Image (cartoon, rainbow, N blue to C red):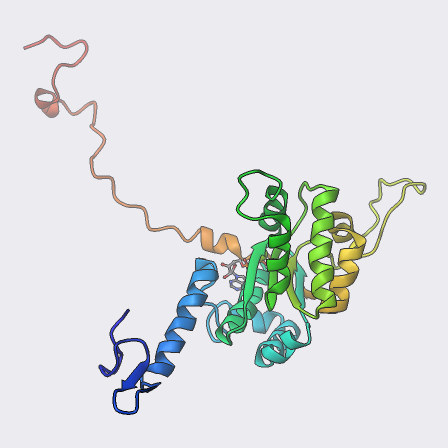
Length: 284
Ligand SMILES: Nc1ncnc2c1ncn2[C@@H]1O[C@H](COP(=O)(O)OP(=O)(O)O)[C@@H](O)[C@H]1O
Ligand SMILES: [Mg+2]
């Protein structure tokens, strides 16, 4: 146990009065609890997003770019306990690298800081965990996993995109989303499968079917019923369309370092002696 921040208790946050035989809170206790909460957050928010906050970049830039979205996120975070109590959620859609995961992490972090339980998974990870419950060496049974996913105050599903999956796995996903819907438990989700619009491709013949609903890809990927539930919990998805901001970061490479060794000049005969034998030169 770490030492008391005020040098008074044994680090537990409690002082014990021998005479009355009663324990009472030490002056360090509020800070001790805040530190525990911070550690809990650090353990569960992916490292790249641990420092996310309203007053740190990229959130102020996102506010300038998507004022309407940030207003919704701000209100949601300011009233987080009430939102979670009512089972209200939010979902973000848009192109890759526009800040969707950043805002969803901001919500998860806010929830954890207010002592709510949160589970964060990317959809591919969540689906593979469901799939793996079939394996003999699986850490938990399907029921245990579903119970866990249904009982946290906030379930954050990141990165709902196009990938291979099976009807059985999608049925389990529906069970999770529907159970949360019925129990009024919130979901926060990010996806790139709801478009601003879906234009009918010119090469399609008039006989070919074309689903022009902006969310057609999401419906095809995770199923109509699951998507309908999400609308009921999260209302309209918050649109974040724009340029991918990630390459800017990737090209931020260090300055080239000067080469440590000069490439030998083959015509510089002053260096021949220490260079050792050369083809075409008599050995000395
Ligand atoms: N508007 C922005 N200005 C500056 N950096 C941004 C902006 N939006 C996103 N980023 C940065 O780009 C990266 C990708 O953001 P992320 O939230 O993962 O995007 P998405 O989930 O939409 O793909 C992160 O490093 C984030 O800090
Ligand atoms: Mg993302």
